[in-house]
Amino acid sequence: MKKTHAPLVFVLAFVLVAGWSVQAQGWSRGGFDGRDSGAEWDGGGFSGSWAAIFNGAPTEEACRECHENLQIFPRLEFLNPDKHHLLLGQQIPQSTVAPNGQVGGVYDCFSCHAVEQFGDVFQVITVRDCLQCHTRRTVTGSPRSSNVHHLRDIRRHYSCGDCHDFGGRRGR
Image (cartoon, rainbow, N blue to C red; front, side, top):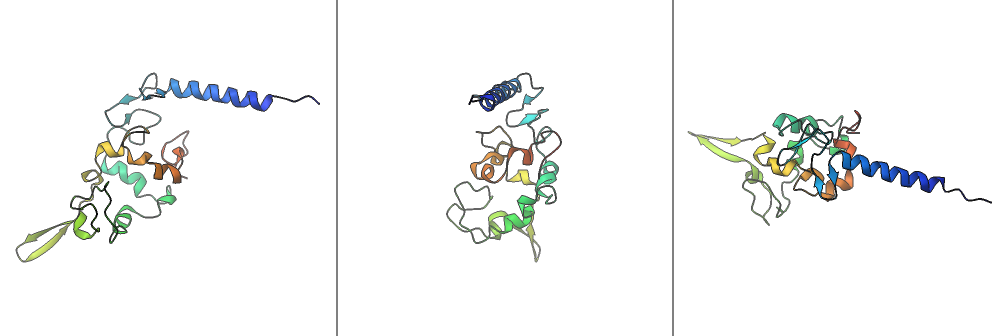
């Protein structure tokens, strides 16, 4: 009986082609360099790249296209205000971006919201701009960067295609 090496040859050919394709897009062991991909590195994200989740600099509107769309991204489970409010009573970690959060303390309303007094009226200030707390540096960038979208915990629950549009199919 003659053994066939077709499966091994197929796998090796796939690895070689995939490796060439990834390097042609500007990815290498050293990270993304933008070479031959039509993409420009903008200091913290991608512009014009097939890999981009933002078309240019991130904006509040662009954040909400994904984070407020549970039909396309059902694994998010909660809209952002609800997701943030679920932190109430939880211990504040070292990595917090809450403007008034004290590491090691417990999240409460005032960890994120300021209160202003207008005469006899007190008003809770609600900031709905994600980028006020989640800076551009923390929401853009390649894998192995400070991009929260690429944290190990995120990668454990999502695949690249959930966010990146590879051929018109993403989010599912």
